[in-house]
Amino acid sequence: GGRAGGAGGGQVNATLPRAPFSLREMAGSSSYAPGGYFASSRWLPYLGKWIGVEYDYWPPAARDPEATRMAVADGGDVESPHLIGMLLRGVRSVVVFLNFMTPLRTPSGWDPCGRPPTVRDIDDDLPPFFGVVLDDWGQETSYDFSRNQVFAKEDFAWVVAALQASQATGRGAVATTELSTVANDWWGLQAGFAVNVTWVYLSRAPAWERDLPAAVRELAVPGGDAGGDVTKAR
Image 1 (cartoon, rainbow, N blue to C red):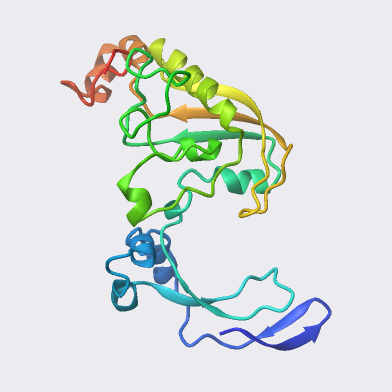
Image 2: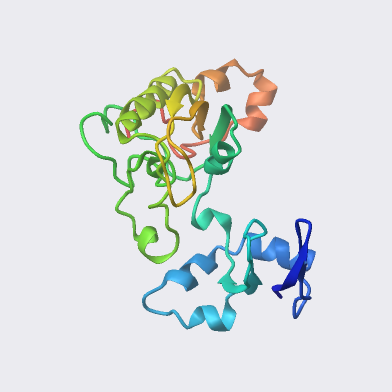
């Protein structure tokens, strides 16, 4: 499919696609995480042609749209928490839930003001928003967060320190911050947009767990280490 000719009055005539973009294909392609690997792999680029997901795409906002064959993949391959979309829409107050696999390391193991982070200190989705890209194998083979800087690099350390301080209370890693954007030409984001961001980094909350009624605590609190007590040094 693509543009068939101008119709005037803000309308564009488009040809019918070769096949319909069904609900099944929408759901499947939007979570097709391997797509990022197939599109960027330096070793097996031909895989995308065999088992990848590709569609003809043209941006609705384009003045003279032309269809381009595009690889489709999980949106998390370029941005996992959809913060940038909120900024582009001019949302002034955002709550970002960082439901990551990597626990946030405590200050005894990592001082964010003292050295750059590693993949053992913090998940690699958050730092790129501040222009800090971790040395991670996944960045080379599957996903690419290198274009996601929207805040000043100087703000990274104190934001993380605020999360660590909250985590140390035993009630979870939650921090509300006042930030201002930096320009990002790739995403079309302008500098100087003031935004209130509440970061919620997935973690254990032992103080909250202790406050639960015994019957609820028995059902809700995992037994054993369950990933460790993140209020203690890791």
